[in-house]
Image 1 (tube, rainbow, N blue to C red):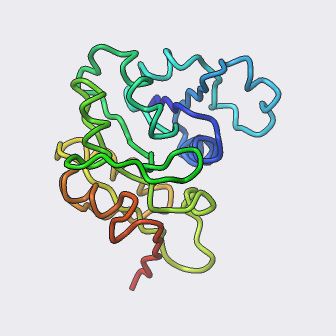
Image 2 (spheres, rainbow, N blue to C red; image 1 turned 120 degrees about the vertical axis):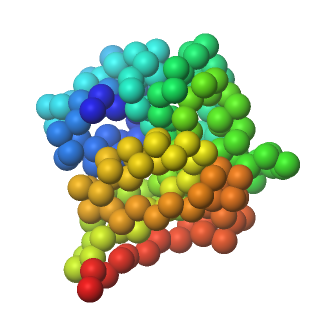
Length: 197
């Protein structure tokens, strides 16, 4: 699959490397342009290409790994996502780690409104970056909570992450699942390992 990643900070970088293990074609971008990533070429596998944000946004699956405050403007660069999947990895913090209030909407519902006609999946935001590659020190799989309003999109996402040593756990729709995963929710900043029996 062709996967566009918006944001090449800590989270975007880890996810680019993680999905590259799955033999996908990764299009990694950042706001300062593809050329600004050139010095980091040696960090990534050959199936990770550096592109402009506009190109990354056009991929069949888009991973949004930018600060929450910037996300709506980034997503608005595309008028119609035509039912493509957008994976929301954001957390509702400002740059100085103050919580951003979005009530009565969840953070992912805000993202879904900004990504017109996209099928939004909330995922990865409860896991610290050092565990986003799916690795486990010992037996088992890294539990990955996710939520979304489109059943088919969730099935596709779960199938995408299973081979990367994740145990995907469906938390339902963005309203409920997003609320427990976001900042202040019951699963915020938690991570688990599923031991296979």
